[in-house]
Image 1 (cartoon, rainbow, N blue to C red):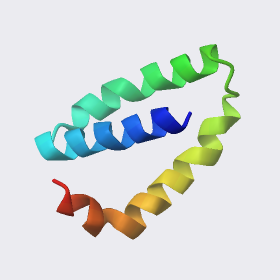
Image 2: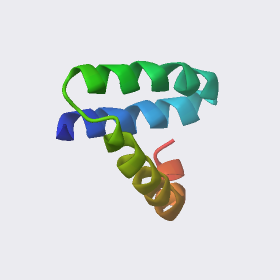
Image 3: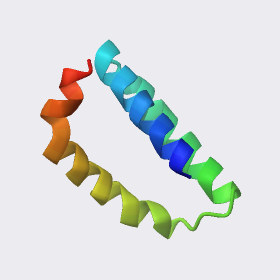
Length: 67
């Protein structure tokens, strides 16, 4: 899971670099299904998604530094 989160960060950075938010919209359902197939509860996303948004809000300026 830790590797997946690192990969998610890299993916989000790429989305922002390319300004291609459609790519993100297309990927979310795939990730949702894949995680569930791997044994994650659908509730996982309702817990983690708001935390991810909060972290991005708090560190957005630092994220743009890497773009």
